Image (cartoon, rainbow, N blue to C red; front, side, top):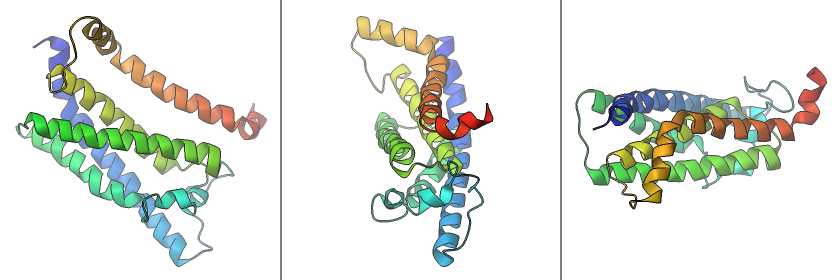
Amino acid sequence: MSIKNLTLQKALPYILLIGGIIGYTAAFIIMFEKIQLLDNPGYVPSCDLNPVISCGSVMESKQANAFGFPNPFIGLGAFPVLAVIGGAILAGAKFKRWFWLGLNAGLVFALGFVHWLFFQSVYSIQALCPYCIAVWIVCITTFWYVTLYNIDQKNIKLPKGKAMTAYGWVRRHHLDLLVLWFLVITGLILNHFWYYYSRFF
């Protein structure tokens, strides 16, 4: 096993554990704020800071109940699983290939869902929720590193040749690519809401 593979293998349980805790905390806060809002329509969520950073606008949108129930329920169920998996690996647990592929499949769903929520939030609802952004960051990061881990461990097999060469480049620049991913999202947000933030410059 190469040093880079060993480094990711050691880091992954911490990524899952910490990501799971952050994601669960954010989902819990969103759910708490939503319950308060449902109970009292005049309630102002703690993260309603300005016309752009406005959790209330996001929580009251139809997209906040994408599957017929509040979206935070998904996070409340899924993020503890990530944390438990990370803790179990730190305790010495080993998982089968099917388990890692199942986890990766779940994270592919999460990745698609949070990007849909991102576009809905920015371009349709026209407001952002910082707790939701925390969930986006966790989902993207855990998807990225679980996928790299699965390829390293050959749970996901790439064809030899150019695909492996390209993957070698990706592995060398894994953090750069993740940062670029977040910069693109940040750039899209700033570009769309520049009408508001430009007054501060």
